[in-house]
Length: 298
Image 1 (cartoon, rainbow, N blue to C red):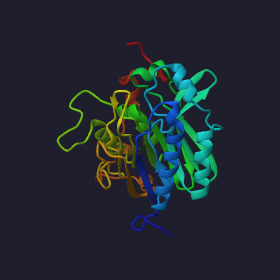
Image 2: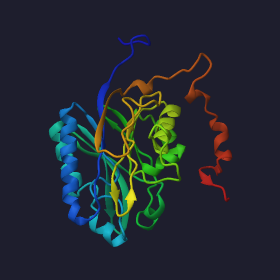
Image 3: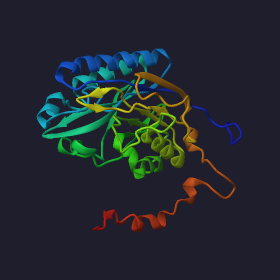
Image 4: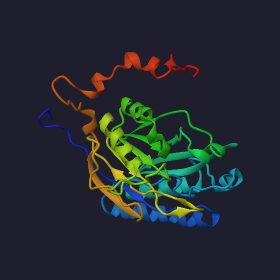
């Protein structure tokens, strides 16, 4: 029997794929084929949880809603999701990836989770960035998915600027949070002296204060005049990156071995301090502008 001095271990090799998908119907088949190669290579390296960037099958910079609709697919049921499900079954892996989803007349910037048994679930981006608001409908739920390797939470890109997202996922028992990203230019400076972008530090901070590891996959390159920031990373429950932060320029894959049940054991900072226990949930709603779950007028 395991004990406090001999804790349970559920070590899983995870991968964050930093790649360069391109928008345009002429690129979509190549984008999907690239994701399948990347998943296969990560599986060959022993990864069982593989995270790809936001909108990995379509690229990001849609000019119009019509163009986005032309790229979009049903989730599940579309060809990209089916291809990811098939490779997940064949390689006995879990895959998180961004996809342009259509449901009726609505489009969503969605993160999908598939595994050895097929489709598991999806998260629709709740915080839309810039022109995304002209194309996508925001999501309204923060699901955490039970899997054989642990409880998986999802977020997308701009969500990391809102600490409530990570906190909600952690409070629901997420063992790991997978972040699919297309981090774009932010107010300068874009990078610090170490070559890291602000989004990487926000990811580290969210991981640190929630006591949950993150697998954050960003993209690189340029697309229709926009530049993407790279700097993908994988954190442990302490929030510090494991194996460093990826470059801002190169397509690469980061790997780390995570104990996916470690977050379930309370991280006690001292005899008298523990982050989950010290939260003042009796105060937060009113101070954050919410009463009975409803936002107060500003």
